Image (tube, rainbow, N blue to C red; front, side, top):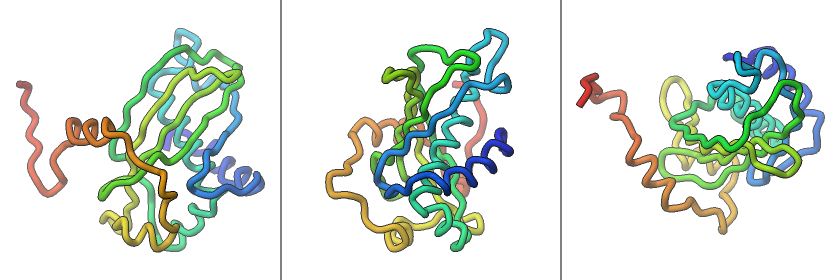
Amino acid sequence: MHLLLRTLLLLVTSSKRPPLSIWEASSLPLRVLPADIDIAMHVNNGMYFSLMDLGRFDLMVRSGTWAKMRRRGWSPVAAGETITFRRSLQLWQRYTIETRIIGLDAKAIYFEQRMVVDGEIYARAYIATRLVSKGRPVSQEEIMAEFGAPPAELELPDWIHEWRENNALPGTRRPAPHAWA
């Protein structure tokens, strides 16, 4: 993990923050550190997803989901991600990572995450995640049994289904040969 020490620190500090439901939004205040930037002195585009991991961990810890997952031997993995940038985060700048679950389907849990400064979105990402146990996906039925059903109004936007379908790679049991078209 790219941010191992920050993640370990976050696991401790998030447990002391006010609790949330897994279906609520998390707001994690942070500051751009020297390890986050590139030669242009702003957050490197590749770093945004690593930082957003911290936002998802904050939500999982504060909701008690992380402890339940660890007890069951479940680990989260990203299955797909997309991001849009609006403004650059600069060295030492304060910002928050806003994180919420926007829905589920038969294969994934979908998060929307935003980097926000003074109420303005600087970057927004959508992340499809899976829970795995012993190398196998955890079923949505098991997830619902452990964490409860999502709120009735939680419905994935149609474009998320299209995005996942249009960007999917074959499953690991099928070939995925490399050949430029």
